[in-house]
Length: 294
Image 1: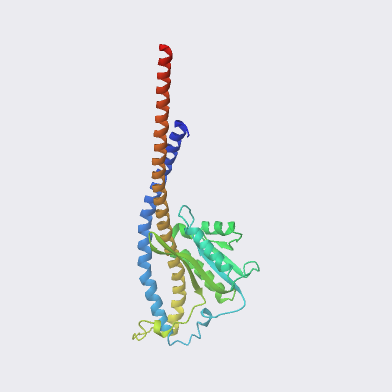
Image 2: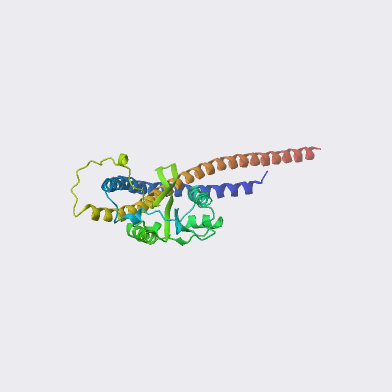
């Protein structure tokens, strides 16, 4: 059994750690509220925009926007990995890295990375670090986006990706991120970003809406598609941001509970060691007294 000084040092150390994890839990809870409000407010707008776009494209020949739907055989595949800049959030980052690596090892993409046919864009430092530890290097990293979460920065990134796709550099673009469900649940999501899929009539909820189109259907669709694509990445980043704070709050809550249990265990050991020390001292006194009598 460790001596009293060692146990006291352990208790002090764990109590200090508990204060840190408890503080981080409260900070994440405050940030989660703001991030949760942002993604909840974004979803109806994103869903409605997509519904309107789908309905406009139902009877649209697509001659002017065919490139967005083009499925090519020549070119590279782009994987966009959205994680966080900070750790201490459980399996939040590692789950995305694992899902991306599984995709790269899938039969459809087997050998793409080694042959230079796959690029990886990482939004978040931890995703790049996780992939690097597994032997995969990010082609580009965009860490500053998560610091401000400004739509303008995300729009610039989306413009770059869309431009590369339309030029034929990429044949396919996929997003990997944690979709926010609630504070304790984050869903690892793999989403097809480009090429777009043509809408099916039965999925258009307001297909019969009597729209008055100004200036023209072609111009509106050409304007809405890039807007919807930019919004798609922005929504994924907001989803990931809310998921990050939820995951960190949960992780720090568990860490705080574990620290509390550990302190109780150490205090029990301390009391046992202290009792044993007192008992030994009493025995020594009694033995000394008996020796003096003799």
